[in-house]
Image (cartoon, rainbow over all chains, first blue to last red; front, side, top):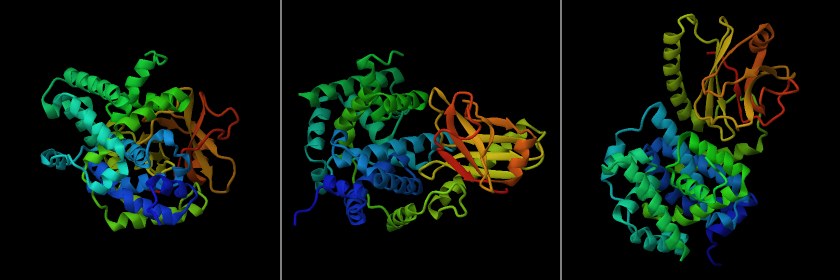
Length: 183
Length: 233
């Protein structure tokens, strides 16, 4: 039997199939956890968020539609929005730990796990080509915001540029991505 | 801002998905999304465009304990959700610890600001949202006859709605309103005699979403996104 796609698994999860959910988690939790960890820095908080995200996936699987992209696109949305909210709350209440500083030294992986690349299909490859067309400032700022959940001002601090400049890098970069992906 | 401008909507959607749209503008955009299909479509289009940036992160295998907690959470889904919770799920204990730490800070600020409250709160309740995340801390000062709310993780109510706080009596009778919350996140309510008595015998607190000015019927009419047991401090 062929390995089911994540989309097929998600469809089964919508029918409350626990085995499918188990398989979905097995196949996707590594990438979802990595996304959460990158934004939330703290492992304990990221683990809590991971649990929230998968409980939400379980509950909302029936609302997944193709318009939301691949299963992984949809799950990434759920994970990132949750992580962004938690990150804001943490920053407001207590701040993030020093791990943030250490994290800056870790390079972002440029080549993903081949298995994961397969899960993303063409999406990742097409986006990569379009990201490569941006200026380094534009793609760097967009990546800091996307992968670490940085605000405009945090990106500005990280790259040492004025916030207005960063805002326009991001705005123009996103515009160029849209044009490139629409080609 | 002119939200009917499709270019503006597209730009906001892009920054919403990227995450650089933050704070109130983010919450406003979420309300807009709920209300408007084209706003949702713009947002989904941006999710499809850029979410595979996540492929740039090296996957990290989560610890097995997370899966066990998820399974446990799913198992307990079969039980109907009750307003009163006798047991806090172990998985949010860490959150509670954090919430209590926040509470300690909140209390110290409170004491500093309002020396009239020498007495500690008679009750401290944590209201959870539908995802069982702590969303509000509610301190009830019986002697001073007032209730102090602090939003941990709760957005402002929808623009044409108000949050209303209720006491759910232990005997199952109709909830008693404690009042409408300020749109400000830290609301303070003063209790009359009836509310004071209800507080003493209540089982749980709940926040409902009501038309501006509060429920027209005197009982909750809208969704109840937040609730939690009344527990002695």
